Image (tube, rainbow, N blue to C red; front, side, top):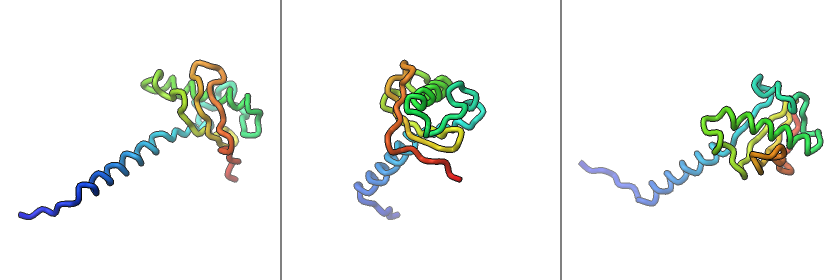
Length: 119
């Protein structure tokens, strides 16, 4: 029997692409605040991207804290430097960066990522 051999570099390239694609997909966490579990949070009620930045920071921090608490590994989930996409109750969205999980203002909106709701 003869087996076709591929170049060793091709296998390495294919597996490299798989790892990079998986890492990119795993790094994107989308939190939908219209879900019943997030909708009743005190700082989320009528949140929108047009709210002042400090108010959005408080809301995003509260959402991240609840997400972290519900995960299987709460102390390693959403570490500083992580980014999440938050979709507010009105359908608008923005990306926030986790800065300090222990702080009430532990998330910062990333400028230029705010998107109006799709209507």
